[in-house]
Amino acid sequence: MLDSAGFCRQLAEQAPDGPLLLALSGGLDSSLLLHLLIRAGLGPRLSVVHVDHQLQADSPQWSRFCLSLCQHHHVPCSVEQVEIDRGEGIEAGARDARYGVLLPMATAQGATLITAHHRSDQAETLMLRLLRGAGVQGLSAMRPMARRDGVSIWRPLLALERQLLVRWAEEAGIEWLDDPSNEDEGLRRNFLRQRIMPLLRQQWPGAETTLARAADHMSEAAGLLEEIAAEDARELGVSGRTLPLGQMHKLSEPRQRNLFRWWLQNNAATAPSQAVLAELLLLQQAADDSQARVEWGGWAVRLYRDALYLCERDGFDAWTGSAQWPAGALPPPLPNWHWSREGGEGAVSVLRPPGDLTLSAMQGNLRIQRNGMRQQVKELWRAAGVPPWQRRQWPLLYRDQVLVSVPLVGLADGESDRQCEQWFLHPSL
Image (tube, rainbow, N blue to C red; front, side, top):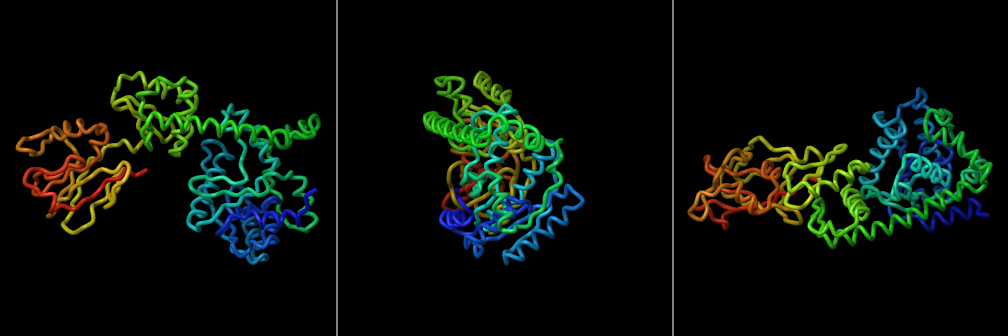
């Protein structure tokens, strides 16, 4: 049987390079993990954060305990207070608030985030997601090494049973605090942990191990589905937040739904419900109605020219303002777009003529003098395949109340591109 000394040797061998950031609750699991990481010689690379959810009157005591524990181990520790959005329940709100602190902090430090999830957590998570009707992706196991929002997450205790962790903590004389909220069976995970899992273990002594193995099988299946979706995306020409529909009819409906899920997940969009997926499928039949859209949470998908465009809801809003751009100054900020001197995927070319300019939003039937003709801006953009909402977001460049430059289109007659600065508009993702 694995002992704590052998496990510490494994930690030293398996630890990712670079800074390490431990999420410390003050409970048994994370307090023991702090001890094991120090014992493995990883202290010089380690820092700790305690997230105070402010859900209990004694939460300051937990913060003081974590600070004291880290002081004892000579490890830097910070305490971060968060406000819980209870809209989707306390558990979901606490989790979102917690990761809303942990992930940016790990990013700022260039650190791997370490959490104290163990095998029992794996089994409980699988059960909870089953009861929510999750699909293969949702039922996938947590992995010992994973990435979320660009942050590496290390879960070194994931293969260990909690009973073993309790024994190691008692043998080492580890101090920890017991969270009184763990006894609140009104919380779903606690009800599962206190009532259901003990019954399962009575009938099936290896229940947690079996459930964890099932989650591993789901992870393998999810990986295969991702490979299929990635292959379909390449065939269809999916690029970033744009999904062409031209060849979508060749895929079966389950494969289409799989592709949609993959596309949305890759763009960090909120996971869609079955009803939302059904609406996305129906967009293919919308006869290229430029107003056709599907919205859920803070996200929206719109149809234009046989392609779907994904954006945050307010990312489709029109710009209605104006701004000054003096000669020699940086361009003024715009909603939904940012300026750069570098091009790239999704970038829109803007030629800036010399002089003091005014940026104005598209209004009415504007025209620009080009090639000896007065040409409608909206028709030039339509011919270039610019979606209607982007036509209402890009700025038109005026000098002395004369339209001199149009993004993507170019310059008015009489303007020389050799005298212009080259800028690019990039969508703010």
